Image (cartoon, rainbow, N blue to C red; front, top):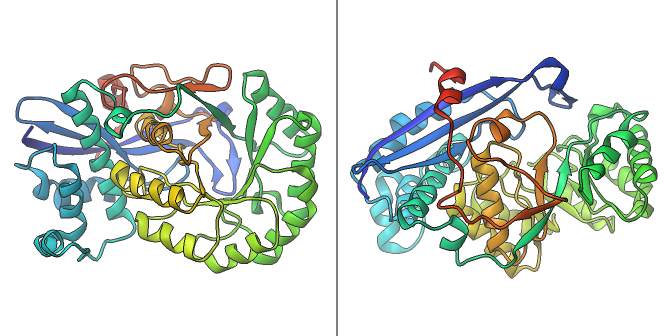
Length: 388
């Protein structure tokens, strides 16, 4: 299991105009990711995803460069089975020997941001590789699943006031019993967001769970107004009400409402999630395993959630690789109870891999295939690979 090569490619897949949606990120016309491939001396391969943005579109050139020129030299020649040690080596750089000897971090300057995202793709690929080598699933490597199936929520909800009811009803018709819709500055004002949520609730009735995601676009007063106006609507959670840098503001919003507050898709490493918890800012932690540090760091974040009796709901908006990483973590974590399932146009989830990604009757079955359980299509990579 000695690492022979580490590669990264930027995949850029245009979305047909008729399938595009518009949010506060603008019109999303493509889906992008950095696909990381780790190859051992005996030809075994593992795959992972690194992300340059929490939405679908992002320039991944810097991620490819980081993997190829910063992380690859650390990894080539190393034992791919030593995942935790390799994570620490990447995180601590030339001072890794101090970190390993003294039991505390001596991190590189890139201890947040795209370097951690690049590490996420590498780490994910290492877990995938180890699972394939041992002919077992990543969730089994983490100790096995707590459940045979888990409910999924339909993640979408961009339609305007006149069409949002029909849109979310379409998700329920596909078997989902929970839906997430987007709110925030995309609506122009708080009142319009409130009206859209009320329209969704009116269309769905009281039995379907509704989440609202502001993508961090409200101010503290706006988020408080939104919550006060919807206390009686029984929101499952209110996601990223404020800019991720405003943790104390998010804590202020949380203290002013009974609506559970979720956040974390824009955070890096367990240290950011520790700070969210210490600020008393959140009820639900939402790490994105293609951003936060991979599966290794995701397990540490899951342990934080469990120890603080907070909910874990991994952010699964990405390719099939980060989706399956998040699903695997959720199935192995006591604090997780529901999984995000993209209902927008997402070729990286549905077209990149040979296997079919699906939720049947609103449920996702526990992973059983070796590694992450998904295999990229070479022809897809060839078609959508960007030159860096």
